Image 1 (tube, rainbow, N blue to C red):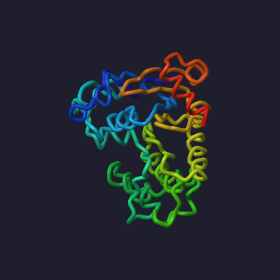
Image 2 (image 1 turned 120 degrees about the horizontal axis):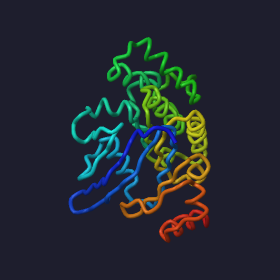
Image 3 (image 1 turned 135 degrees about the vertical axis):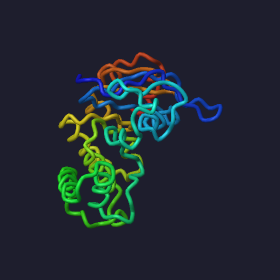
Length: 246
């Protein structure tokens, strides 16, 4: 699609003797919406945590615009301003208002003025429909609203890529749609996203690339049409059949 932003080469991650990721290779290009699907325990969330440097890979490379971020050429905090993350458990600061949550990183990491950070935060809070709640604290809003704030917070840092780690899995069913609608809008705006998800309709309808992981390995990847309509691996076929039968 567009220029290459991230390139993952031979990435592996073990916890003790347990190999969670095994020789992972793939790329994220500008404008891509990539969905990572697969059964629980297949290494999907660990992959995102490694890409965001929240976990240190055991071996391999993570190239950001051709530079290996595991070699210490770029500080993790600086790198994370370019490669943002939205967590399944929101990770908002409970002692801050919605607006303060979206300003804090801008002021501390990007060194923006309070006025600039506020304007930037408000722009994205309006985009995700949370502008009326800027003075609320996280405990006063619903799970779906918290996740929309978390998305606005990530966007306010102007990242090149946003990683989403099962962004709807902690939500009540009636709140899932509001978060997915925001993500659909971001896709329409050509925001580059790498999304670990169990929402097959999102993966099928919104992504331009789908990666199927199984047992710490990328078993299959391709367009949604290729993966959903004509999966080649029996593990992919079995996994998708379970969702069709639900």
